[in-house]
Image (cartoon, rainbow over the protein chains, first blue to last red):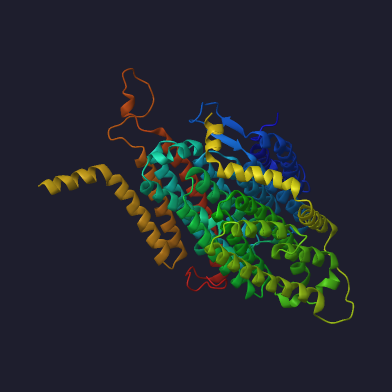
Amino acid sequence: MVNPVLLIVVPLGLAFALPLFGLISKKIIKFIPVVAFIFNLVISSLLIPRVLDHPIIVSIGGFPPPFYINLVAGPVGILFSTLIALAGLLVSIYALGYIKEGPEEKYHILYLLLLTGATGVVLTGDIFNLFVFFEIVCISSYSLVAYMGDKAGIESAVKYLIQGSVGSSFLLIGIGLLYGLFGTLNMADIAQNITSISPLSVFVPLVLIITGLGVEAAIFPLNSWLPDAHSSAPSSISAILSGIAIEVGLYAVVRVIFTIFGGSSNIFMFLLFLGILTLLIGEMSAFSQSNIKRMLAYSSIGQIGLIVFAFGIATSHAVTGGLFQLVSHTLAKALLFLAAGYMIHRTGSMDISTFEGIGKRMPFTSLAFTVGAFSIVGLPPFVGFFSKFLIIKSALAKQDVLFIVLVGLVLLGTVIEGAYFFRVVQVLYFKGEKVNPVRKEAPIIALIPMFILVALVIGIGLYHRFITIILNSAALELLNRVEYIRSVLG
Amino acid sequence: MNLLSNVVNFLNNYLYYIGAFGLVFIGLCIILIKRNLIKVIIGLSILDTGVNLFLISVGYISKGTAPIFSKPGLDSALMVDPVPQALVLTAIVIGVAVLALALSLAIRLYHHYGTLNLRKIKEQRW
């Protein structure tokens, strides 16, 4: 019997014990995140078959429901915690060679805390606990953005911090209002009583909470911090911020709308338009970038828009598609940032035009980048194709003129996406002088995680049946809130 | 006369909320209007204080006592709700952490740019 609380306790404990390990030897501290996430990955995968059967509820402190603080390890929680552990493991292997300057010890502590917070957000069943874990994610990402201590990093971190903490204050006001209305902080308990109060008084906390969480989830009008923060952080951190941090924010938004407030059709309509707007603005801004990391950051905004759109359709196929898109975005975007990290390292510039001929100088890294780019654009057989296909199919299944127009806009976004990603791939392989330059590949320790990601992107793309099982039951958990309430409160 | 008593009644019931949200709005205005980073951080601090006061006033009962059955005969209806106080304790700690981080970033920003005026720091297209 494995307890899901270990997923949070072990990395948290290791994060604070890390300076002590540093006393023994400075060399071992960078291996501690690797150990922690191998542990998390194993525990999460062991839990998958059990949570598919029924969700595991862990009560902390031993109080009876609904007074306890609980962890709800359902299919959604374990899906996300597996994803976090996987991405965390691969990026921490990459960081073994990549992080060489600056206060390394603090990097590893903050990195562990960031991912512990993310795991906590996806597993908790208590809304204030969600806020606390969310703040752990936010504070560690503010400091990691400023890790290099250079001009751009500090400036983006300040910007991120101001917007993020205003968002957190809104979230806290929303939670306070909910507590005032219902006298409880347990998400299932609030969800059970939400219909007993007039919709108007529930609307105010809903708006405040979505605004607060929307800052971290990078939903359109609240995302001006994202391109700066993601482009000025070290590449390994950009991969985590793009692959995990905004996904976790989005998870919180979805959990609040679907489970706690039990979304009405008006809210879903709002999500649809917000998603389309975020998608188009993200893709169009990405198209006009010449800085590779800014381009990838804007492309993340576009992808988030697509996921929000999928959740706005709110049929079971669409929610499955949205979760699938989340998984495929995490894998592909982490891959892109990791590959771009060493390209930037070798050329010494983030400008796309300086990457001419990199395809010959760094063939493996370029191959990894290309696979990631094709997956994000949605070419078969990569994983991005199937998730996008599922979303578009479920939108068309609605058989509504509005949805056909919106699908047209999504496809327009994909065309723009294809245009700027193919431009980069063209620069990598087909521009520059014809003579064969000296090969200088990324170190092997960085190529291993990249190729594991490439294998996952292609492998899950080809055999997506086994992941659809867990995605389907995760979608069911989100859509069937009565079942969630029943399993938590008994 | 009736109107006056209504107003007094209203203030009696909602004074804490008005005060708390007043602080939230003052904090927001400072964050949006001021150009100096230190002043913006002060705005964040005021915003935090407003949120904390609001949380406390959710659970407050006028002339209430602490929820501990120390003496026999205490009325549980007159006890203050302890949960918001626990929440505020956590929120204050988080607020302090954010504030400390913001101030240390402000020092580094000043080292790089020689100014704290946010309108002049525009390298990342603020």
